[in-house]
Amino acid sequence: MKNLLIIFSVMLIFVSSCQQSGNNQDKTSGTDTAYDNVILVYNFYNTYRCASCVAIEDATKKTLNTYFSKELKEGKIKQFSLNVDKSENRKIAEKYEAYGAGLRITKIENGKEQTIDLTAEGFKYAKSKEDKFIEILKSKIDKFLK
Amino acid sequence: MKAFFISAAILILLSSGAEAQTIGDTIISNNIQNLKLKVYYFHVTDRCNTCYSIEKNIKKVLFENYQEELNKGIIDLYVLNCELPKNKDLVEKFSAYGSTTAISVYEYGKEIAIEDLSSWAFKKIYNPELFAKELKEKINSLIQ
Image 1: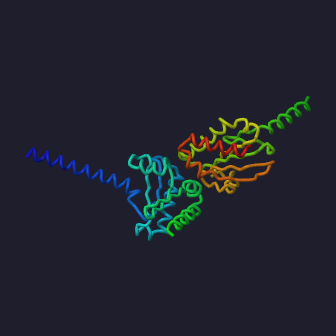
Image 2: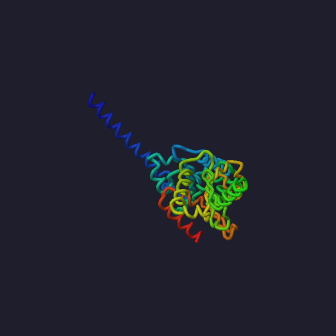
Image 3: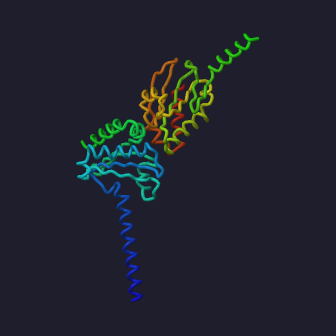
């Protein structure tokens, strides 16, 4: 009985560790190369966030929910908020050279990637001129959808 | 004697006008004929590390390489909180409603060009050496 319990415990640990590594893979690859024919919107941030950084994420979500809810539901647009200080996001942060707060929009079409960096626009407008920021972001996404 | 003191005071005032004035983080030349470049850094009140880092590295480049130009009024540096009402006009001019890096170029006392360097600054700030190198190249090309 004791042996059976030990074998069962070992099996349980093995299965759970396999599941965990599978999830991690999903997380890192899931925020990028696993997708095709999609627009990926990345809000990168540090653990310590300033008001502008929070405003960029809020305004990004507002833009997507207001103008692109259909595309979000259909999976044509995906939004990710990623803490670049977390080790699990290191790979994707390095790919986008996002070592602090940032906003990147990537279009993947037939395996070909095109990325625009809207970090500066975000910091300039999202907090004090949200409408202007939303207008810029919307027009960039509209162009990517065409 | 009184006339002497008044003359001395006027002389001091006039001579101080020829040198750069430092007001907080801002360095203004008061010498429009010498002026070739104004470097602007706008920030909000609640700032993140990236914003602090951009300001720190702009100052580092200017103080380590262009101290003479700052003293002579060839380069001015403006570090401004864009949320303060007193900076409203400049904020509108540069669309600097948040963290913004910009330069304006002067020739014979007139502003001839404006360039927004915000995207460049946010992109390069995580590599301070490259940030410094490219900013120096930019400044050198404009103050020649």
